[in-house]
Structures are given as structure tokens and as C-alpha cells.
Amino acid sequence: MAAYADFDDTYIISAAEMLVARVAAGSRAQAILNALSPLATATQEVPRLMGSDADTYTLAAGANVDSVLAAGGVRGHKFLSVLLAAKGA
Image (tube, rainbow, N blue to C red):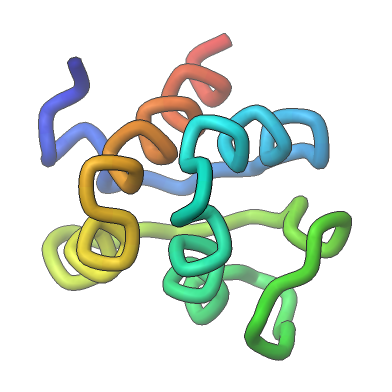
């Protein structure tokens, strides 16, 4: 399991990787994407729509990770773990 500090990073996420993360997040996926939206390089309206969520996201220490985890609860950790694994692949 990834440690909290491991999530502080920049993620360049493809549509296919985001789909896998959405599945891991289940019913909390939209809330997580809404929390991620302000952290994307492309300005998007909330809610983020499937297909427009492939982007570069920068999660800085503390508040950014907290906002994503709070939006997704346990599923937020699964979602970020998928993105972290995709980054390392």
C-alpha cells in the first residue's frame, strides 16, 4: 500500500489509465475527479466528464492530497494508488 507522502507528485494520465482509476474508485470517482479538477493543467469545468479527464495533475504536499482523499474516502486511496502505479509503469 502506498504511503501518504508517495502521492505528492505530478501525474500525466492517459484516458485508459484514468478509466482504470475510475473503476477502482467506483461510486466515488466523480467526487474524486471534481477534487482533482483544480489541480489539472487544462482548465475544465466541474464536474469533469469522462473522456475529458486525461490530463496532467499536480498534487502538492498536504492540502492537495487531503482534498482528493477526503472526496473519495477509502476509494480515494485506491484511485491515487492506481495513478501512482500507472506513473511507475
